[in-house]
Length: 188
Length: 188
DNA sequence: GTCTATAAAAGGATAGAC
DNA sequence: GTCTATCCTTTTATAGAC
Image 1 (spheres, rainbow over the protein chains, first blue to last red):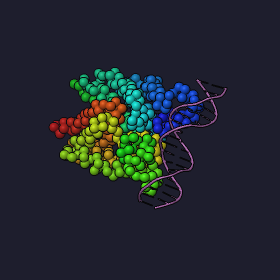
Image 2 (cartoon, rainbow over the protein chains, first blue to last red; image 1 turned 60 degrees about the vertical axis):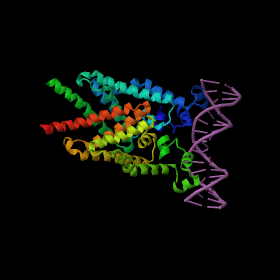
Image 3 (cartoon, helix red, strand yellow; image 1 turned 30 degrees about the vertical axis):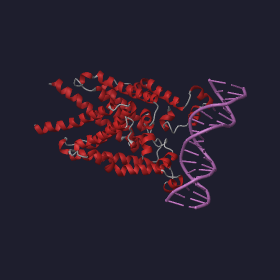
Image 4 (cartoon, rainbow over the protein chains, first blue to last red; image 1 turned 180 degrees about the vertical axis):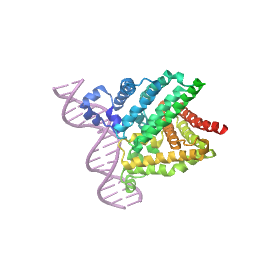
């Protein structure tokens, strides 16, 4: 997971994996038919670990469902800062690196995106009363993913977290704009 | 350009470049010290060609500055459909593939993003009177890039252009929401 | 299941004639 | 400037003893 995250798939050699994991060639190939199967296992680990690895850390001490969306984005901000703006989303980077990905690999990446978007959509669903009826919660959640991925991409390319911050600020304006309308209706 | 776009940087071999361009090893290395220098030339070609290759085709017959933003996004939609949802933004893909990119490479990628965002910001600037004073036009333009990159990423991963469409629809709602407010003020 | 050694291919880059 | 031939390294994967 660490090597594919830090170096990408193609630039991570089997030799890298062996030395990093202190495992010998024979042992690795005993469990994994080939390199792609290691990738699949990594993608499955991300998919199955989204709650423990991502959501629980992000949402510790945050109860408001809408703020949980921004707490999740804030976790990525922390990652960007902690890595001195070299952070890349492991799934997004793989999704754009692998140009002729095996269908099974694409499906695992899609499952990761879906799990992420599901979690955000559930936040909006839990705050449904604060949004106008008919609000496209799925679209809003997918946009959160795009804001995160795009913000991470720009922050890393420019080595400046401000690009991520502006992306989130725009998104917050959109979300709060929707909520304000509802508040106005409630006030009326 | 074609090979890095279709296969990415690491997965494009010098041999690929030689056979695709019908050039011999000696000739290529006569002009380019190494593979990275070919990449730099490609990034410079994108950067210098943004108007002729991207904006002019996108904006043919579109005069309204705000609609030009969406016409640009529509060009990406066309690329997604034409490639049966395998399209990837050449710059975005490289930006996420190259994890330890040379500073000069990162700078060329950043220049590409900046050129793109500049063009979108100029559209909003040309329609400044339709937006509230103090509107963050730069942030809005950067968000357009994130919407495009994220939408392309999702459309390719899911092999479904609807993910791109929903991203653009959300963005249009945001932009038109801002404009509506201004209209309301003008009406008052 | 794990170990070392190595096969077999592909990679970037260079040499030196023309 | 272009050509062919090739060097040297790295790569994924396998063999076969333990």
